[in-house]
Image (cartoon, rainbow, N blue to C red; front, side, top):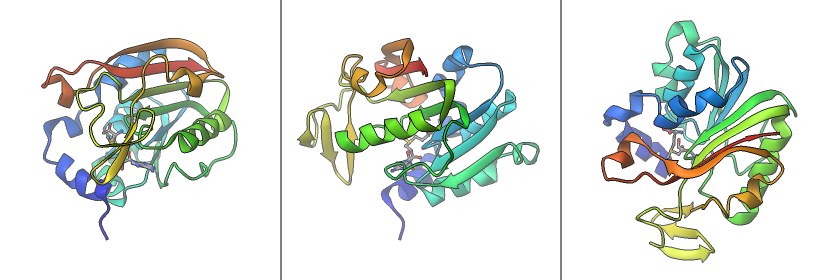
Length: 210
Ligand SMILES: C[S@@+](CC[C@H](N)C(=O)[O-])C[C@H]1O[C@@H](n2cnc3c(N)ncnc32)[C@H](O)[C@@H]1O
């Protein structure tokens, strides 16, 4: 059976932005060490995997959607195949990696679908797999999003919207989840190609160091 995300990935393939590195990836790379191993959680069709791999990073992309991963597999150029590993995984479950093996954990719009308890577990898993002094770089939905408050409220800042659940963060509320990191950068000025068209420039961006 095709899941919500499998169906959405099929629709994404019709969009021009799906094959371009995200604005966040192109902006955040300046904070990264010049080389290392990146874990991307919810990396979808791999446009950022291809971008970072092209800059010399080793890459592990995880995603829950088989369809998303199948598209990523087809798009990854042959000369990058040995540097990008694709792993089907539901991030609500423990990460299937040894501790302290990644230099950077990166996630673009994929860590905001979970209740508070699960979100806390995910962040503690991320901490575990990051090397000492490793980096976390994430972009998330914002309480300033135009759709904030739509759907059925399940928890503070957490809503059921149709088939999926969505959490919204603010620069204040994210602190509870990223508290063990030294904050390098935190704001609500993140953009996507998709949302830029409708005048939305308020996504939460966080870069931290373990
Ligand atoms: C908004 S998309 C972002 C995808 C990609 N990072 C990008 O920017 O194009 C959210 C991604 O999270 C993935 N996802 C949703 N729930 C997930 C889960 N529980 N575990 C792992 N990935 C998940 C979806 O399949 C999808 O690829």
